[in-house]
Length: 345
Image (spheres, rainbow, N blue to C red):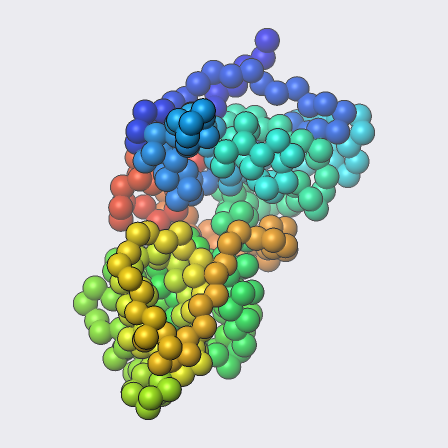
């Protein structure tokens, strides 16, 4: 029996690297040898819980991890068309009929091999050219999340936008906003090194929200405006929350002009009551952004075209043999921006 190594949740805050049977593709399936897989906040969320409450009575069960894989096809079923051995592919983790890859389903992308069920180009996988590094290709899924957020914002070139949170999603949103032609994009974060990366990928200005007054700084950058009561506010049109911190809502409500929009893409942490009165005084529109209903492979051609720009989002490339160190980095606040695990060629 051929085997492979795969990463699963272990005890709380720990991974397990286990030996598992290597999948054999059926007539409609393909087998991918994984070459790179990013670590997402969802992975660390499951690790902090010690699994997921999917067992009997809500008991914790171990899960395979990884939903940001890129790799190469090594075998295809007899009924598969449009794919062949050697093709480099990125994966739609939500396209697996058995359940979301790395997020509750039986398959995980942080494995040496990954079965693609009902393999179909444009639905479950997309092919990318050989000159794109696997680690950059592994950004495809999180960049789809970021693109959906920007699409939800309906940002126009004339809009003034601020992105809270210079992690991978916030930086990805910054890139998409600039590629969309948005005139002025500000990024706010509390870590100076992340703000440096924001400028490197195209942000027009940055705000250190740990040391600067956000409303005053945005007013300097975007001009002055007012809320419905005529109280002075920043001229910012769109606020994107890619941080998920309660302080972001407070900052937005304190700065938002009449008719401003806020897009919430970050997973929200528990917070105190939101100032609904403040939202009312600005007629602030709150827009939620979840996943990527159509964007998963819309991003791929631009990821290819602008690969050097997107590559700046990766702070750490860690070999699969050191997976424990990779996940420890990802779980340590401020230790890494984006960790991608790489597999031997």
